[in-house]
Image: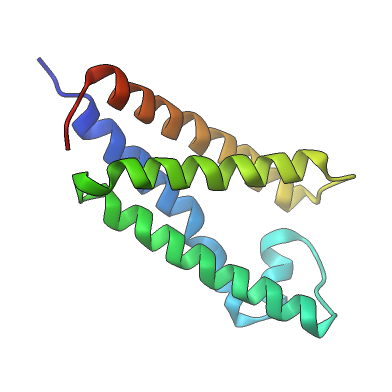
Length: 130
C-alpha cells in the first residue's frame, strides 16, 4: 500500500515554501515591492514594515522547506502554513480592493491552502506517525 502521507505532507510544505519565499525579494526596496504587489510604497515607515514583512516571509518559507524533510516538524509546518494563508486570504477578502498582482497571490494561496488542508486531513485520518 502506498503511504500517501509521506509524499503529500512534504509536497504541501514544499509548495508552501515555494509561495512564501519569493516575497523575500521585497527586502531589496520599494521597486521590488511595487513589482510584487502592484503598490507604491513611498512612506518610509511603511517601507520598513513591508521590507521586514519580506524577511519574515523568507524565514517562514525556509522553515516550510526545512520541515518538509523533518517529519517531526510536519504538524507545526502544516499548522503554520494554514494559519498564515488563511490570515492573508481573510485580510485580502475584507479589503476594499486589491491590485491584479495581489489578486494573483490570493489565487495561488488558495491553491496552497487546499494542498495544506488535504495533507493535514490525510495525516490525521491515516494516523501516520512522524
